[in-house]
Every structure is written in structure tokens, then in C-alpha cells.
Image (tube, rainbow, N blue to C red):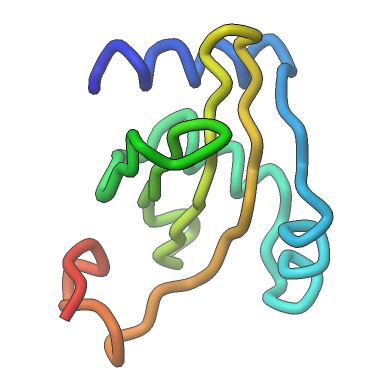
Length: 104
């Protein structure tokens, strides 16, 4: 898992990122900036992963950015070394424990 995160961070550093239309509209709705999303990917941690997802494995990343917990859902095309940013949101205590990592 750590190795894949290194590859994902390298892809982001090399600007090999595709922002899905869905995430772009959600960022506007939720007042989240692109640079905050990139910070989650570069410095956050994987809290859930779905290696069987198609067409590429996906995962949830978590980081607190500017006192705000954020989840970012990405998929990674390991062959082409491209990160697809699918969605991002601020987790709530309705669905997550106080650590904002563990689902209720």
C-alpha cells in the first residue's frame, strides 16, 4: 500500500492528474480548493481502498487541511501513471467517528 501511495504522489508531482467533471462541480458546491485536494493526496493517508474497482483501483484519502477534515476519492491507473480525482468532501460525524476516518 505504501508503494502505491509513493507512485500516486509522484504522478501528482508530475501533474499527471485528471479532474473528473463530478469533482469540479462538488468543489464549487462545497467550497473546497484544488490545492487543498492536492495537499490531501500529497500528505494524507489512505483510509479505505478498493483494489478491485474498475477500470482502476480506487481509494479514500484523509487529511485535515486548515482545521478542516477532508476526504478525497481517487483512482489510479498504474500503467499510465495517472491519478483520477473522483470526488472530495468534508466528512461528518453523522457517518464517521470523531477521527473522521472510521465509518459508523
